[in-house]
Image 1 (cartoon, rainbow over the protein chains, first blue to last red):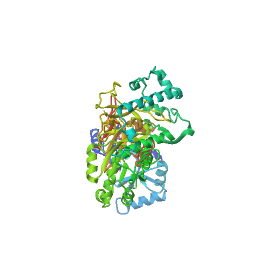
Image 2: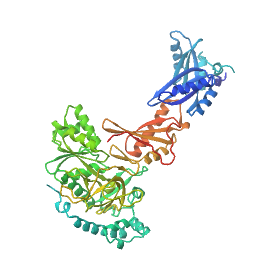
Image 3: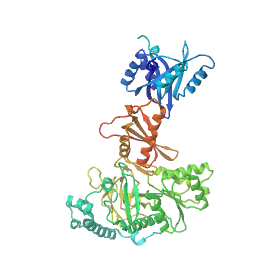
Image 4: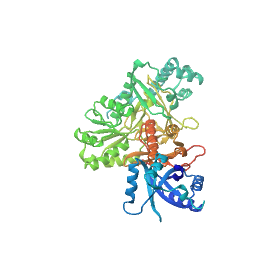
Length: 147
Length: 433
């Protein structure tokens, strides 16, 4: 098992907290026909970080960077949860048992399953220990559209 | 009419001029002989003390700039030995390097005497209770007015700045008649008193305020006087000259600059030529009696005009008008001098941010608020909010250390702040005076 297959490239974009910034980011992704799979905004006083999983991270990075946005890639992992009551609890228990500290997290609920996206300090260790405990991780290949 | 030193304050102009010339001549000889700094400057400038044959010859002497004081840090320009000094004050410099002013016993005496005259001229004296709400410490405002007010026999309440509710209680309990502070702090006191259900006009004995250390306007004076039922007087001074030294008399029409203490020139800052009387220019000051840190032709950067016509109060010493601004881009935030160059200097030392910044100044209630917006360096970008908050906190901390004043910091996107060709205009001042 190569843990790297399970690390997913999230794009993180710095944005001042003012009207129109999200529109500019989303508009740019649309222009490049990039699909957003999951998305969150973390906000602080006066600024925020837009985090997104997209089907074409490299293209998204290039486009946003060219527009003057501060963009970076962040390695995250995505765990499938059962989309039923208690699904998040199962996952949270698994992460707790594995001793994984979550830096931040967000979720989306897709057609097939609900997915919890996690930013953790030691990605490879987290991948191994989640799989060891029977967790179901998405592979980065699962997210990219047509190859 | 009461004056502290009537013989001096009402000396006919001819007598004052003679006295000034004598003091200038003595000063120049002393500095040529005993000060390396002034000796070198005079030699470079091709002027010898013998060339000073009239007051007009003052113009032959070289200027002194704030940068000279900064470069002389801490005491290179002092002409008194350390064991002759009885006090130091320290003010912020233009690039984060402070300026130290030393005082001999005589220097403190001159300063205090200047303030004794000034405070008497606005109607204060024995029997008055004076609350000194300027900062005490390295800043000259608190201690300067403290000793000035003591000298005239007033009872001093040394409250310094802050703890406003207590200030208002003491003002009531000790029957305070006069307060010395920045105009914005007095307005803050007024707002706080209202919230406490206290009317300065009806519930206190306050009748005068000595206000300075930051720009203010006639409109602000009218507002303060009408609201509080007091007279508000404008005081002037900077730490380089000693501290607050000169104040309006009860005529409230210009600040008397004591001729035996200083020589005032008003120059066109572009040509360095004197402007006609009554016209605005940069005030250049020579302090005639100063031992530890002599000041000759000091470019104050303050813009004002001079009025030598007789004052109805009877004092013969010329008056300067309310300051009309600065030659440079110095800001005064809560009484503290701040130069954009200081901000720039401090930011350049922080790798996480770029050198592109903007300063926005506004008033929250009666107090100044300074916001520094700075662009994040892309290398420092993190997807974690905590990391970004830490950068913001570190920038705020660094700026506070450099400026001695708290600032809000906003992290901006790279390329989002204005770029300047030529002289940068990095300050947006939304305060109304």
